[in-house]
Image (cartoon, rainbow, N blue to C red; front, side, top):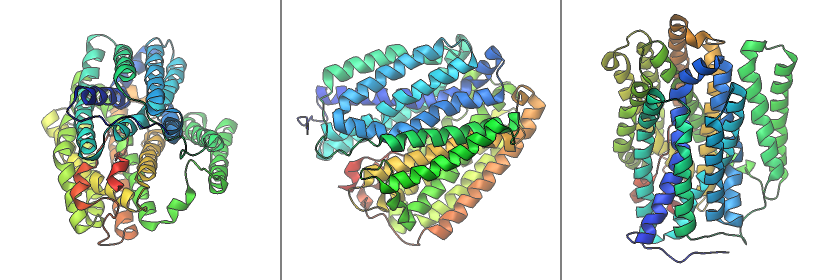
Length: 495
C-alpha cells in the first residue's frame, strides 16, 4: 500500500493537486457536454445521418460507462496518479485524432478511444483528493474541486460554441491537447502517488468484456433499428446478443469472488428504487438535451455560441440550490423531493418544446430552463444522498460509482431510442419543420418518463427514511458533475 504524506489544503502543494484534478476531470466533463452543440456542424460537414450523430455521442458514453468501474480499480491497484496521467494522455491523444477525423466512422472510432481515456481519468480525480488530503482539509479540497468543476462545466459550452462559430467544430477537440499536456505535467511534478494494493480487488476482466458487449449490442440494435429495419438480421442479432450478454453478465458477477458490480446490493429496496429513478430521470434529460442544441440551431437559427449559452441559467440554479435541497432532504427524508422533483423536471422538459415554435429565448427557452433547473435542484442532491445512504457504511464509493453508471446508461438508451420514438430519423434533423414536430413529441415522451420516475419514488422509497451514511451536517458536501452524469460523492462522507 502506498500512502502519500498529508498535504495541507492552503499550501502550494495542495493548490497544485487541486489544479490537476479540476482540469483533468473538467476535460472529460466539458467534452461530454459540448459535443451536442457541435452536432449540426459535424452533420453538415460529413453529410451524416442522425444515426451517425447518435453514434458520435453514444460511442463515448458506451465505453466510459462500461470501463468506469475498471478504471477506479486500476487506480487502486497500480497507482492513482499513474492511471490518472495515463488517462489524461490517452484522452488528449484521442482528442487530437477526433480533430483529424475525415469521416463519421473515423470520428465515432476516435470518440470511443476518448471514452477509454475518460474512464481512466474520471475516477482518479476524487480518489487523488481523498488520498492526498485528510480531515477538514479533505472536505475543503473536494469543495473547491466541486465548485471550480461547476464553473468549468458552465464555461465549457460557451467556449465550445465560440470555437465552433469562430473556427470549426474540430477545435473543441484540439483544445484538449495543450490542456492535457499541462495537466499531465502538473500531475507528474506535483501530485503524490498512492495506491491500496493489499486491499484492492482483482480485475474483473470477464465482467468488463461482457459489459462492453452487452452495451454495444443493445446500442447498435436500438440506433440502427429505425433505419435498417427491426427485422434485419444484424439488428436482431445485436439486440438478442445484448440481452443474452446482459443475462450472462449478471450470472458472472453473481458468481465472481471480486465482481465489478456486486449484484447483491440491488436486494436493498431503497438503493434499487433510487437507481431506478436515476435511470429514468437521466434518460429523459439526456434524450432531450441531445436534441435541444440541434433544434436551437436548425429550427430557431441560434449560433453555436448562443446554443451553448442557453442552458447557463440551469447550471447557476443547481449551484445555488443543490446544497440547500440536500439539507432539506436530510431533515424530512428524500421521498417527497424525489417524488415532486421529477414532476417539475418533466414540466421543464415539456416547456422546452416551446423552443420549436418560438425562437425567442425569453419566451421560448428560458421558462423551460428555469423550471428544469428547479426540478433538478430539488431532485439530484437527495437522490445522491439516498443512493449512498442505502448501503452500509464504507460502501459510499461503490454506491456512487453504480449511481453514476446507471445515469450514463439511462442517457445511452435515451439517445438511441428517443429520436426514433419522436419520428426523427435519417436526415430529418436537417429539415426544420420535421425536426420541430419531432422535438415536440420527444419532450412530451420525456416528460411522461419523469412522471413515471416520480411514481417510482413515491412507491419504492420508504417515507421518512433518511440517509444513514451521510450525516445531516455533511449533506452539503454532495458534489455534482455535469448533466451527462449523476452526482459524485467522496468516500470520505461515509467515514
